Length: 370
Image (cartoon, rainbow, N blue to C red):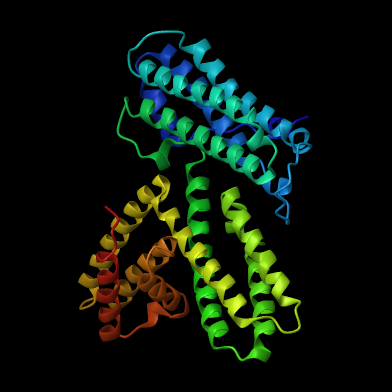
C-alpha cells in the first residue's frame, strides 16, 4: 500500500459544513461537499509525505540516476492524489460557468496544467539526476498544488458568504503552524550564528577549533528541529554544505581562523536570508490577524490599568501569548517576547504594567503588516 493511501479521511470544518447547509440548491451542495472532501483529502496527502528520509547528509555533484527508482513512488502518488481531486470535479461539475462552477473549472485547469509541468520537469535529465534538485522540484510542485487546492476551496466557498481561510481551508492551521515554526526557529538560529561569528572573529588561535566544534553542535541541533524538516530542499542543501565545511575545520588540530570566519560569515548571510519566509502569503494573512487581535487586547489592557490592574494584566498576558506566533518577524519585538516568556506579567505593579503595555503597543505599531 502506498504512503498516500494510508492517510485517514480528511473532514470538513464546521464553518464549511455550515456554508454548505445554507446553499439553497441541495443537489449543488451535495456535489460541492464531495469536491471539498476530495480537496481536503488531497491536501492532507500532499502535506504528510516525509521527504526528509530521501535526503542525504552528503552533497555529491555526481549524477545519481538510481535516485529515480527511489523517488518514482513519491512522484506517482503526487500525480494520483492530484488527479483524484480533478476526477471528482469533472464528475460532479462536468460543465458550466456559473459560480461556483466557474471558479472550480478555472482552478481545475490550473491544477491540470501543473500536472503537465510536473511531468515535463521529471523528464529533465538535470533534475532527475541530482537528488537535491529532484527533491526541491517535487517539494515545489506539491506546495503549489496545495496552494491551488486551498484557493479552489476558499474562492468557491466565498461565493456563498463571508469566510476566512482559517475557517474553511483544509489543512490551513497546519500550514500556518509550520510556517510560524520555521520563522521562530530560524530566527533563533540567526541569533546563535551571529553570536558565534563574533566569538570566532575574536578567538585566539588555540580557541578556533573549539568554536568550530561548537558551531558543528549548534548546526546538528538545528537539523533535529521541526523547522529544518519544513525547509525547502535547496535551503537544506546549503545547510548540509556549510555543515560539512565546519565539520572539516572542526577535526583539524589548528584550523585557520580566517577560513572559519569566512565559512561562518557565509552561514550568517544565508541564515539571515531565511527571513524571506515572512513574505509567504500564509504568514502575511496570519500576521495581520494576530497584529489586529493583539492591538485590541492591548487597548483593553490600557483602559483597565487605572481601575482593574488584574484585568489589565490578564489582557496584556493574553496579547503577549498571542504575539509569540509573530516571533521572528522583528528583532526588537523578539527581544520583548523573550523577556515576556520569563516575566510574571500578571503580577506587575500598575506603573510598570502601564509602561509595558505602551512599549508593547509601540513595537506592534512599528511592524509593517499591511
